[in-house]
Structures are given as C-alpha cells and as structure tokens.
Image (cartoon, rainbow, N blue to C red; front, side, top):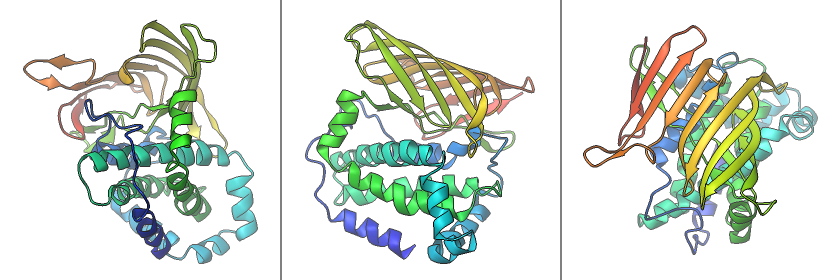
Length: 329
C-alpha cells in the first residue's frame, strides 16, 4: 500500500497535460463519481463468477492481500507462478487491454477534467479516482476463490501504474485517439431499489480505425463483453454499429456466451445501445443515453429497459446524479 501512495505522490509532481486531448470542456464526457461506480462494479456483469455482496468486507480482505504483496505472492505460489499466471497466459489480455490501455485512457481523461476544473494536482485526483474504482473491482473479484492475490497485485502494482505513465505521453494519447479512434463507452449505473444492488455498470472501450477510407469501419468493443463488428457512418461522426462476440462467464478461461450488440453514436458520444443475450443475465438490455434523451424541461437523462433470464423486467432512470434508480418486477 505504501508503494502505491508513493507512486501517486510521484506522479502528482509530473507536468500536467498541456492540451485537452480527450476531455471535452464544451460537452463534458466524464464524471469521476460515475466512473467510480462503473469501475467498482464492473465485474458484476458476470454473475456466474462474481457477486456484489459484502462489498466493504471484501475491501478489508483485499487490503490485507496487497498490504504485504511479497508475502501474498509467495503464499499463492511464488514469483515464478506470479509471472506465469499474469504475463504468459490469457490473463494478460485483460491486463493489457482493460488495465493498461483502458485504465491509462481514463486516468488521462480525468486528469484533463480536473485540470479544467482548476485542481492544483489534477493527476493526483485522477489517480485517486482510478484506484478507488479499481480497488472496488478487485475486491469484488474476491468472490471467486480462483482469483488469487497474483491477479490483484499484477493489476494494481504493475499494469495500473504502467498505464498512468504510458498515457502521460501526448503522442501515445493521439495514437489511440486518432489512429485507432479509441473512445470510452462506459455504462450508466442503476441502483435497484428492491434489493439495493447496482446493475448496468461497466467500463467499456471501443476502437474504430478508418482503415478502409470508406463509410464502413471495423469495430472492436472491449470490457466484460468483447465484441467485434462493423460501423457504418451515415453522416459525419454519426454511426450505426452491429457487432457480436462473447459475454464472459469464466474470465480465467476466457469462456462465455454469444452476445449481439447494436449501437448508435454521434459526435463521439454513445446515444443508444442494445445487447441481446449479454452480461448480467440480461436477455436483452436497451440503454438510451443522455445524449439521445434531451428535453428543455428535464435536460438530459438516461433510460434502461431490460429483461433478465428469469423474465424479470428492469426499468431504470438516470438523471443528473452519478447513479440512477431502477426497479425490477
């Protein structure tokens, strides 16, 4: 733990972003509190492997694990097994894509947000929110006994720290933004009032490079659901996308079930998404985002309409707050 706080202090003294490469001051595209909820509850998209029960108790267990990282690594098989598990197996895929690239992107985005807000140490604030979200996510991963301290330590001490450093380079940020057309399509979390559980949360990243120089572009969606497909640009910066892939049920073995996704986005903002047979045991899940639902009286608000595998319907409304409210019936 001391090591993490030392790194945070070190990075807080680095030079700040010179330009807003990711943040949009005229149309804010990040809310740190909403990011925390999405990040902390990201893994609940896989109810077969993870649970949000005992949220705070799991944090205590996590802090014990990472408080003595060397002891924990040796207890769970030693440094050789640590390296093999986290760097030479399929586990390295989410480490690289979601923690290194996705995490670095989010830290840089929040850094620019806090800089725009006038914070004295914007990078330190960004790192704090990033780690709070990742702590929550790693804590909920403790639901499954197959997740050892090796996973937690690699994520928090290696890939998350490398991510911060990587995305301090403007050329790296521009490469992902311009060449790969990377963007974040994070979910709009909803609090179910009947059980006081969070649903519809998640951190998601898309890549849509203009390799064909036509209206059609290849599309990749990364998160707890991994989809690939094609986007069609009907007007400038206005896309319809169809993709298919896998919703994870066993992340260590990279197993899951077939999922189809349809998306509509405009001017770099996701407007609407429909997942069929996707995560959280939803038969279908339709999200209408604030950029799509606008009224003069209410302003922007988001809407969730879904049905679970057990035929329960879920309705959620998100308006102004970092988390919306919903009911299941």
